[in-house]
Length: 311
Image (cartoon, rainbow, N blue to C red; front, top):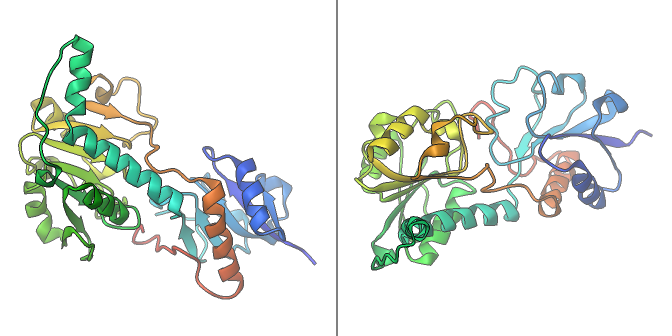
């Protein structure tokens, strides 16, 4: 009797780490990384991140596709995606990493660390009296499985936290609003904006020049979701003009960020290489295995998504 097989594809994740952790959870599954070295008919599961065009079409008996990450925008619009359940990763390790990145980025601005960094390079002792954290208005744009916990972490730290999402959420300590008709008012009152939205047709370019201009003078922007949620040329203009004072950017329209891109030379921009929240196999393998067990039992997987919506 043929065993179940899983095909793995990612140019960024370690296949050996995934094989070790996943087969420990599911010893009856065959783990493959080479599509040409396995009988396509026995491949029932795919664990992938941005596989090449046509990848899924060669496996006629897929029962589950799992995306190696929280964002599934790379799956939207593919013409080879099978009509099977699709899940994404959302393990506790990813949540902790994102929350820590958001806390670091917000606190860096709230405690004026960016100013002290520049003063140190000038050899200047520059004192700025700290503000109470409860007086600093932080807005989290997107309150999903990563944004919600990040907002809660900011509340626990003592910030005045507001949140915006597509549908209304109820998060203790967070002043929540929802829907496109409330977004402009939300932005007008935010000192530090944290973007944690998925990339969908509705969110692509959501923060255009008009909306960026709604942020108060001196606002800071942190984007740890997808670069295309923000109109990049408009953000460059806003940072150059001072409409937005500072930005911390982990994601970009084109990645890796091209060497000649304007962001590299901007002193008011901190760049990190898309690592705010990454998948740790040791933690995530348990969820992948549980989704496979559920599909085998006729149940939906964990963290199922609708690729037509983009989340």
